Image (cartoon, rainbow, N blue to C red; front, side, top):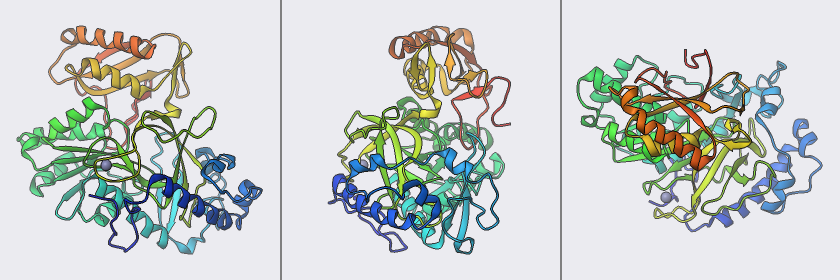
Length: 454
Ligand SMILES: [Zn+2]
């Protein structure tokens, strides 16, 4: 129940529950100073942070420059025979034991390396997240991603085993074989994206000829995309599998593949990556710190305090978090959050800012009786942010429903969006199966005339 457990590698996986969030931050600021000393021995970091005084307080982090996705990507453009991972590779190549990549859903993938020590810390940290999310000895855990090199591949597999679960890596096969494995192995914990989790339940029913609730899945760990925190999406995952628990899960390959995981209390995701990662919450416009208080929102900024191969300092995640609580029935002292959108995803309708995920939440709040939960906004070009006419929103109807039946609820949903978010949407119903679904990340926007998963 509490977070003070040791992993199988003997590393401390999370701070004892007696350590408050504030005490933890103080400890991490001290670790940040050690990181400064270590990094300034390398030219790439000396030029970025060498001029700074040692950071002596959380507030002083504000003076440290950000690292962005562009910085990391640009550093890998020019090939360097001694540094295949680019200028930010600090460990020599003979010290690397594994390479992972970002999913590349928002551009060319970037690659990250880990040393043997990094790998131990990753296993412990990701294991802590899986333990928080409900993996324990005795659980049979199905991992559905088909890509080993991404954060949701090998690193998740290591974390599941570190948490004590029996890993059944069923991804990467045909859906029929995946479904057979779900039944034969009596899988109790399913790890999937929120959208794939529901889709896969339907496919299992079709392929096995038995309702998915008659299989053994009781916990669904949903990561890779925001969504599992939205009440209607959560409920549809629970119903689809006859599950008793949905645990939302979030991480970043650039930082640590699992950073946040939801406990049995179900009120949001706890930060599970301390002491290895320092997290800050900032206002994305002013860059000022946002206090960790219930109801606060801000962008998550991460610093890897212990990583040897490819550390990052104040990495801008682009993830917009909403703090849902600072005290939890489970006893963990880290605050709980929901991911409410991505800074990059923000759209503008006649000067009003809006996240696609907020639109989805309002639409499902109003019309979930007729909708499957899958939807997407159509853009004219990849870079389109501004809309002067109502945002074209394609929504998937529940199986067997037609557009005429859904007309009333969909009109009500469009009105609710305009009332609550002050943006207008033009809802276009699509029959079940018409919107493609990926088994990895599903975007809430897409460019007209393209199939992002083809
Ligand atoms: Zn909790």
